[in-house]
Each structure stands twice: as structure tokens, then as C-alpha cells.
Length: 348
Ligand code: GTQ
Image 1 (cartoon, helix red, strand yellow):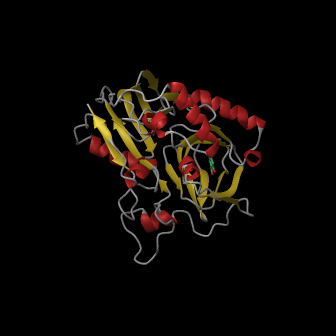
Image 2 (image 1 turned 135 degrees about the vertical axis):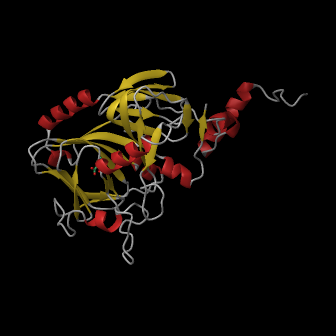
């Protein structure tokens, strides 16, 4: 008898599996390949959500219910690989949120961390832990875990932004808590610009402890400054073949990513430049702030313009070409993956 020859007929094995199932046991040898695959094979697919289409539907939702009724009036990006999963990629939740003039999305807090990338409407605000920040197009706004936050618009125009939350990771660990404040809006305990003054000018106070633990104390990375920096280096450096020009958002406390589980960066692809294929284990969401890109990802290819949102799942080969000078905001779970020492990438 050789080592590969079956010692018992298949039906005996099945009888055995049926016998152990009521004991809450299962045979590893039937599941091993799926449990320990040779490489990641994402259930999620590359996909693009069009700004104009999502915006129109979100405005329809604006006629159906108030921000107060909804708590958060958001259309959730459902990756076609897992409809109803409230996931844009395997680990990340994302959606498009609308605040209408005069509305308030009441103060609450949760153990999930959130980011906002503003797409429309000036002077909407988010208040985080008693401090407001005004939101302008392209701004990258952070809500640290367990920080109270409410949103509002005192202007006469709607405000629209993209939310990204790490809530699926928090739920996977079964560590989710949340709570509502008695106050609809927080009482302002620090004046506008306070965090920026303390932490956002490449300086920091001597003795003030970090207000949000491991999360960056800067909670609005203004697009104007980020864009200026990116364009300045793009005017000097040769584009990297795989990523063109990019700058990471940084936590001034430690030089790391701004959030414990979420990484974020800004990319500029000059018109006509095409990146060489690469893949990475982080599930990425791209938001086109300016210009237009053609993406090839796995067996999908599409064009994405201003305000469009793109899902790029783990370990899918991809490349991008700018048909118009493009600026792209990306967030991903790379910050978590690096901490767990599981992040990998490959370049062609
Ligand atoms: O703005 O606090 O898209 O709590 C999902 C959950 C946004 C928010 C979302 C939230 C929020």
C-alpha cells in the first residue's frame, strides 16, 4: 500500500464526519486548503461607484428622511462580491453621507474609527471631542475611536462626503461599543483651529498628552496644504513607476499612519502617465478628487472621474493611467496589516 492510497471508502469517511458533527468537531483535512490558501483570493471585486449617480440617489434619500431620523443619512457602498455585507473591501465600511442645510447629525461615539473625505459643500462642520472643524472639498477629517462627534451644516448648500470606518475589524474582534450623547450637538469646549495650532504646524506642546491615544491629534488635514505639497514634489521628482507621486498622511505623535487601523495617502498621477502593475494585500478605496483615471484591476477595467469611488480588493493586480491630471485619495487597512506584520506587496 502506498501513502496516497485510500485506506477506507469515501462513504466510511462521510459516516465518520456525520458522527463527529454532533460533537461539534470537523475534519481539518477536508478544509485545510481553504483555511490556509497559497495566496489571498479576495471574495471582493474591483468596482466603481459614480459620484453623479450616487449623489442623485442620496438627494432622493434626503426627501425620504431627515438626518435626525436617520442618525446618519448614508448610502453604503456594497461591494458586488458580498451584497448586503456593508463592505467596500473585506475589512472596510464606506458610504456617502449627506447633510442638508440646517440639519444636525446628532452626537454619538463608537469604538470604530472614522474618516471623512469631503466631496461637496463648503462650511459644513464636524465637531470632535468638543472642537469643530469646517469641512471643505478634499479635506481629510478624522473621528478617533470613542470620541464624541456630530455633524452639521449652517450654510444654505448640501454637504456630501465619503465615510470610511474600520467597524468590521472592530466587530471581528467583538470589541464594538457605542453610545448617544444627551446633547444633540456638543458644547464647544475648544475653539476652531485649536488642534491645528497645537499639533498641525510641525510643532507640538511640551506637556499636553495625546488627546486621542494612538490616533493623530490633527483631525482635519486640509486639502489645500496637502495638495500644495504633493504638487511641489511632483514638480521635482520623477514619478515612481508603480504609484506615480504620493504622500502619506502622518500622525505627528509617532510618524506613523494617522489611525491605528486605517492608512491614508494622496496620489498625483500626471496626465498621460501610466503606472506599472502592482498588487498589495491591503484592501484599498480610491476617491478621485481631481481629474480622470483609467483603471485596470484583475479582469475589470473602468474610467473614474471626479468624486467617483473605487474598490480595489486585496492582492488584485492593478494599474492606473491618468487621462487628465489626477489627484486621488486612498484609504486602506494597511495600518492594521503593518502592525500585525502581514502586509505584502508585489511589483511587476
Ligand atoms: O458619521 O458617525 O457612515 O457612525 C457610519 C456610521 C457614519 C458617523 C457612517 C457612523 C457615521
